[in-house]
Length: 288
Image 1 (spheres, helix red, strand yellow):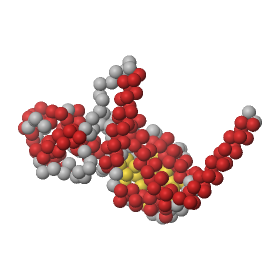
Image 2 (cartoon, rainbow, N blue to C red; image 1 turned 90 degrees about the horizontal axis):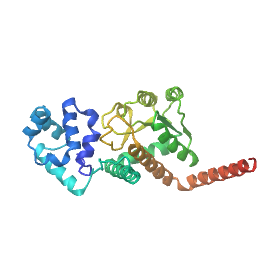
Image 3 (cartoon, rainbow, N blue to C red; image 1 turned 30 degrees about the vertical axis):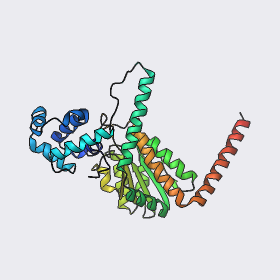
Image 4 (tube, rainbow, N blue to C red; image 1 turned 120 degrees about the horizontal axis):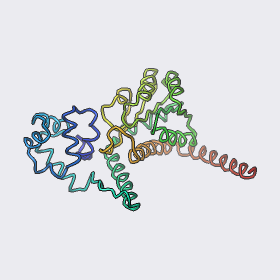
């Protein structure tokens, strides 16, 4: 296990790869982390009606020798203040709700940063630099994330394609070649449209990159590089605002690291784009 990644983040990221019994244990730990240090493996097993070996296997899956080592590391994480969230939301307080969402976004970004493998991020940058075309695949709530990244790369002079229509995405995925870099964005990693599109792209020789949350979700099977965001544990199967912000942060990092490798060329294209948009706004304003 990467020691830079907190235990609670690892639990959330591996959630889809767990058995039903392991998910029961993970849910309990995520919701009651402060109780774990003083509980024995037998007591936890009895409380959740699971076997002690199941608790032991989950600790091993997370990279520990046993449950005792797991508890020691967990208390260290909590002492550092990682993964602390405000769960008692006062729905009638504008300030309370606002502070809560900012706290959740900040926590999620911090956890996502701890998950980044910089070698993999570098590989993704190289894929894009070598590609003749960047193609984005996304559905549902990830569409806005994909469009934001597509727009940035487009303004910086990269040959890009994105269409929110899933039928069009399917068609373009069958036309990918080894000269393309395909980026699939799916919070759960199970969105069938995105998974199938990335599968087609990889089959046709394209370099494939996914931005997702769960380590062993279906989309990772067809990805040459996987870039992970941290989930919010109360929304395992849903995309929410904190996770969308983390997806955007990952793609912004990919964009900026790519642009900086071609700084002069990119700045030239960005300037041209801004000049044209400024000219268009003046014409539009004049005619209204």
